[in-house]
Image (tube, rainbow, N blue to C red):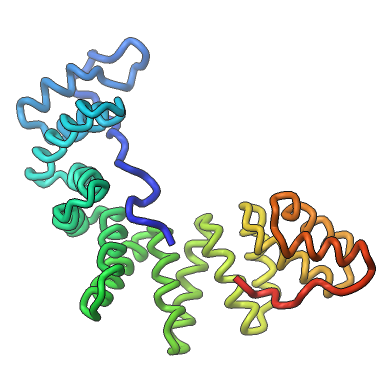
Length: 268
């Protein structure tokens, strides 16, 4: 499951020129730092946010400290992306203040903040936190956030209610169709368990092509069971070379003409 941060440590700078005609020498679209700084000092929240991005990307303690100052100013004025970035900085140093800024950004519709706030709440004990985590993931998922769709699927699939499991498959399908390889794998496994082998194969193939070795093993197993030994061997060899133990075992079994690859194609 993805950890808070949405696979990025901050939002990128917006495409915005502070003053027409003033650009850096290396780009016609990237304003120079002095332009951002001038506007930021006059209370322009977009400039404060963008200046923070520039300073953070220097990867120096001084730059990071000043980035926090500018992001905090913009965040206090209601800038959602600055609120999100400030929360990331605070979370990285385990500062509980991060929650309040993710919450502020989430309430302003920032999808990654909604997703990260869900993670923060999901890790806490108590039914109330779990309910709120699901609510934020659902809000983000409905707006197309693929990691929220995937994690919401995990949450729902863990329930015994058949309706919840069916909904989990719908969210995994949405995330898989948007390019999430783990969602594709889980959707395939769920379909295999209910006898929908055609859909299972389709999504395991998508996941395997994205590098999921377990999916590659399962595709090989399906082909082996159909008597397509060369196709099975090709899939297993691809992932055996990456160190996947079951693929190595399957190849050895074929080579010895003794034993069979172990079954259980839907194992995660």
